[in-house]
Amino acid sequence: MKKPLNLFVAILACLTLSILSSGIILSEISLDSIPIYSIVSMEEKYANTDNEGYSPISLDDIYIPSNIPQNTFGLKIYNGSSWQPSEIVENNPFDYSKPTVIYTHGMGTGNGIDNPDIWFSKGYNVCHFLWGAFSDDLPTSGQDKVWAKGKYPNSDKNILSYTDAPWTSGAITRYLTDVPDHSITEIYAAYYLDLIMRENYNGKEIRFFGHSLGAHLSMSLTNYLMFCVEKREIPPSVLPDRVTMLDPYISDFVSNLNCSWSGESMKEGSSKKALETSLKARDFGIAFEELRTSQYVGIAAYAMFMASDPTANPDDSDYGLFKKIIMYSYVNTNFLADKLPYISAVERMHSISEYWYAEMMNHDYLYEQDSLSYGMAPFSEKEYVYSRMGNKYEISFSETEYDTSDDSVVSDITRAKVSGFIFEDKNNNGIFDERLKSQLLGVKISLMDENNNELVSQTTDLNGYYSFDLELGKKYKLNIIEDSNYKLGVFSSELFEALENKELLILNLPMIKNLS
Figure 1 (tube, rainbow, N blue to C red):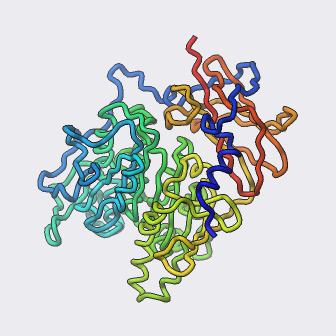
Figure 2: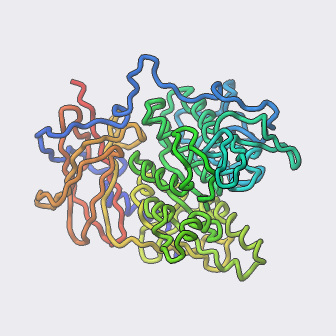
Figure 3: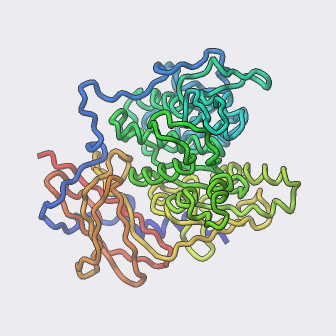
């Protein structure tokens, strides 16, 4: 039986000692005064010191054929009743103080985001990226367009691979010459950065999600943005906080291409890029998750690996390793093969990921059968998803794919833990609403027992994240070492404990920059 959300929130609030909203009297945690670590924020680490400032890619830098149908291309913003192109500044409905969600469709001419009104009613800027003129193609060709530009000789077949984004207009006309001069990822990035950097964005969350090849494009966009942050071309504040891939199409059937922004060869396939992206996203503190609903689409991600050695374990492939980095959820849809003709079953398995995700927006969380822990949910906290990266969930339909209320979920989680982000609290409210740019690198944090004995310690990396396993029946507290740059903000110093093996206590820790 599904437990109500209000019960879960009440329990989680008590266990995580929630800042400001819990009613607990706040005090400063006990600190070691020896400043032996140098603490810096992600924003400081990737600051652009060039006098000319950041230099993001823009639509002004890209050639896009003027006869591409505008209803099939570009970033669109929902105003509550209709969609407006993001590049139109006048009366633009985008609110730079609100959280933002951007959806990307998959193959075919493409549709927009399902249920925009649900996101809109929860205070989100709702956007979708349309690229139907380019995605209405074979999946392998679409994948090439995502990563590469230009014509490259294919040494195996001695032909030219038209990867400089050929596009279609209707069912007949296919343009091979009058094409954009950048990859689809770079074009998407130009639309996005022109919008998000037009003003100072301070919304609490940016989310990318997509289906099939659109999930792949959401992933490649994240790869590109992280690349640009490392080059100091854009600030880390424009990175997404969470990326959701719904039954992604990932394949190693890639032409002999080079990635158009990094110059790296794509000969090892896009599953290698997916693995690299997930590792870097973890370093940046970006929550990455996948919902796999079709075993047939999933096979493409490791088919070449298995072809090279049929006795190999697919979990050892790049895609197998990718799944071990992210929060991975698998919905068992095999029963559809017994209900439907083969082609219909394959199509339904693939499309059900969008339906399932949209339907879950009408619910709260899908809890594990024996725990208050839950898996993927559209409106769960970014910190929860990030803390569950590396875990696997399996979801089963009870009777029908169109009823999520009686679905069940199990995971491979066996240990309770406390985790969270240590961040620069610029507005001194104790809440992690400053997003990625404020996470702190170089903070030493220790898990203490109730007698103030140190049990284990960590020093935060770029992502500002920490995590400690907990034993049931024991009480703990946290200790942080300050330095000359940062001191700990207000926070409850009360003891905490875990009450069940799968429990996750989210405890974000605020620090204040020393301006003296």
